[in-house]
Length: 128
Image 1 (tube, rainbow, N blue to C red):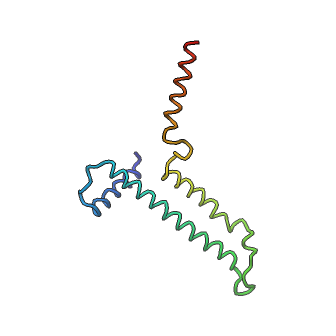
Image 2: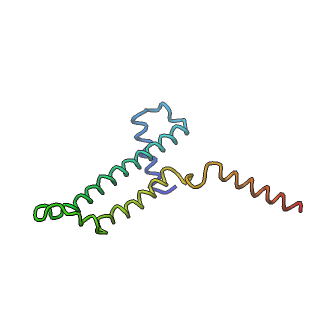
Image 3: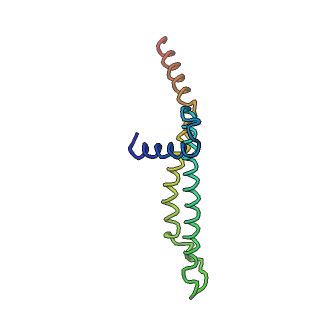
């Protein structure tokens, strides 16, 4: 486990102990669930900030010359208006995958199915 991740989990544990005391500290599954909830909360906070900042950038792009020319929609057609949202969106996607896991592509039982498939294939080839 990396140094920063270890510090993150230690900080979560200190925060948990402040909130709940020593009531459930020996229960590892509860601590794992608590960490997961904190990571999900962090992702949704990241998503909220992403939406707010990008709305502000898009509105500011349309209102660049509001005092001289009025509202112009030409800012909506420029690349720099959406470049922040695009690149930050890639980071947000990576954050979402790290929080919700890689089980999007491979289900929980995918690995077991593949093992059975290879075992059956090997078994059928041995007898031929």
